[in-house]
Amino acid sequence: MDNTTLLQIAKEYGSPVYVYDADKITAQYKRLTKAFKNVNSLRLNYAVKALSNISVLKLFNSLGSGLDTVSIQEVQLGLKAGFKPEDIIFTPNGVSLEEIENVAKLGVQINIDNLSILEQFGTKHPKIPVCIRINPHVMAGGNTNISVGHIDSKFGISIHQIPLLLRIVENTGMNINGIHMHTGSDILDIDVFLYASEILFETAKNFPNLDFIDFGSGFKVPYKAGDIETNIEELGKKLSKRFNEFSKEYGKELTLAFEPGKFLVSEAGVFLAKVNVVKQTTSTVFAQVDSGFNHLIRPMLYGSQHDIVNISNPTGRERFYSVVGYICETDTFANNRRINEINEGDILCFKNAGAYCFTMASNYNSRYRPAEVLIYKGKSHLIRKRETFEDIIHNQVEIAI
Ligand SMILES: *Cc1c(COP(=O)(O)O)cnc(C)c1O
Image (cartoon, rainbow, N blue to C red):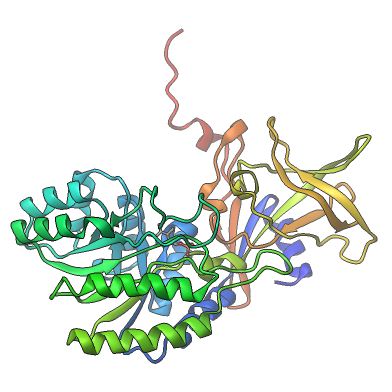
């Protein structure tokens, strides 16, 4: 995705626009597969919530991926994209028994992460195989917004509750065919991850009918210069070896599953926005773009740092800018960033915009959500139209006042 191509896309489809590179998604998928080549049965379930456009899902289907879903709507999207129900796992948190039953009826693998629903589901449907989500209480990364394995987390069934869990399974006679963990979004220390895996193996010994062990995700990708990324190759080597040993010990060939989102799509996406105004105050030069946290909320929500490149003037003199949006609320994308000189009308390119960007977009300020474009086999394809006023109004009901 060179600057010329991106500028052409901004011209053709307008701004703001999300652009994804199918080749990069494919390369990441293959890199992960290769890292685990020594495992006989590997399953990668792409986490739909990272980027849920149906054309992207179709791309994953063509790669042989499965899907990890967190709502029945994501399941429906996956089925519509051509996935078979057995290639989908449903890993929700805090959803109703009814939603889980409806997903199970579709033939999708369900994953339950609390004892209350587990007992209710097992009582009513003891024959339907269920995966259970364990919380190994391992802190991955230091940021409590994104690590979900710690003691106060709302995710998973605590390993300290295994005795109660086993009693429920025994009393209901239900069939546990998988166990799962998803400790958070940052696997930086492979040894910490392997430690959590040992807890999962230990737990697995309690369940004689497992088909798979799901290690969730948390692969970190670099966002800015100097960021460390998860060493996938090293993780692959070490975990594969341990997994194969465990499989032998367990006495059955198990499937090793992962459900990455960010790793597969983050770096494959960019967000293009046009500079409306360059505004100088006593202390700051602001570049104001035709977007805001309504379209890309991660910097405001998590303090994420997306690299920003002025693709209209990539060799211009570097100056310091605060890049902000156009909505009527503080919507800072970046503070005090060194960027090639920005003029009004320039197109800024926000990197790492493939994961959790479009999917978190809203209509705040009654703005349209952006268009999405996929570069596939050397050509750009519009995969989502920019919204129109119709989209803003179509569910609103005007009463007589
Ligand atoms: C969000 C999510 C993922 C994907 O996490 P990434 O950090 O994007 O790889 C995987 N599993 C579950 C259960 C999730 O909720």
